[in-house]
Image 1 (cartoon, rainbow, N blue to C red):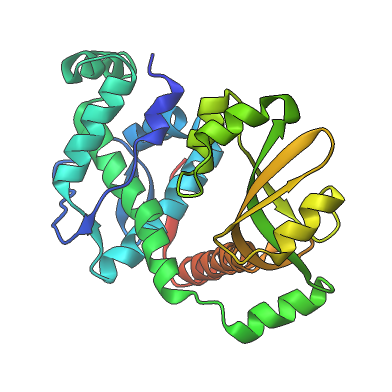
Image 2: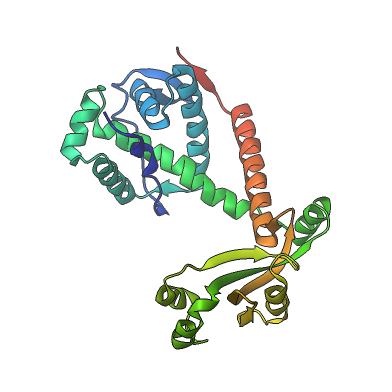
Amino acid sequence: MVSGSFKKILGGVLLWTALSFSALLVDKVVASVNSEPILESDVKMGMLFYSITSREKVIEKLVEDMLIYQFLLGKGLQVNQEVIDQALQNIAMANSLTLEGFAKELAKENLTLEDLRRFLEREIVATSGLQVYLEREVKISERELELEGLKRGEAKRVRDIELLVVDKKDEKKLQEVFDPKKNLEDIAKALEISVERLRVSKGELVEVLDKEVWQAPVGQIAIAEDKDYIYIAKVLSEGEVFQGKSIEELKEELLLKKMEQKKEELLARLRRNSYIKILQ
């Protein structure tokens, strides 16, 4: 039986190509979307691919994918056949099988590589293709970002730093290996200690280090010490966070939310304007 890795091998370059369903009509039709068939083999493949045992839910998902697939084909977006060939190879390899061996496993479910190829073509367009479309259509304006920041309350200044904490007993060894031109990972390796990566606001570090970190320019190293330790910190960046999220993280969160809304709106419109028939 194929493993869960079966569903992970998707993606690739979306290109122009042609698709024909002429050879598929020997399979039992279980539903149609704008007269384009969804077949019994698609349902079986969907149960494997989505790890869903409910036949009704699989058909519902296949109808949704078909709607998106048809819409994107109308926009001129399809998947390169070489991408599908590579996906088939990757799926077989992920299951420790040759392509021939994988075909035998599919045959146990009364499925063929051509069934999988057809399924992958629609799935890649309906997932990767939709992602490309939404990224092109959905934008976050500076005004939207500003309003979201205001809703989340006062911004807090933070700095991202790399930090080495060296025991004073290793001071001599530190002097031997330290070079401000080296990255901290190399120094840490020589000292057999680890580098911490932290996001901090003022007052969160020990006092002697906190002062130096907030005085140092971004990209520079700050050094401080107390009676027990020597602290070496590199200031990587500075920015604002809202409820723990940076501007970039906040923008990404808003973008994903807006893309999901756009997807739901698109599906609702496609359903209204399409002829969908479930035969069983």
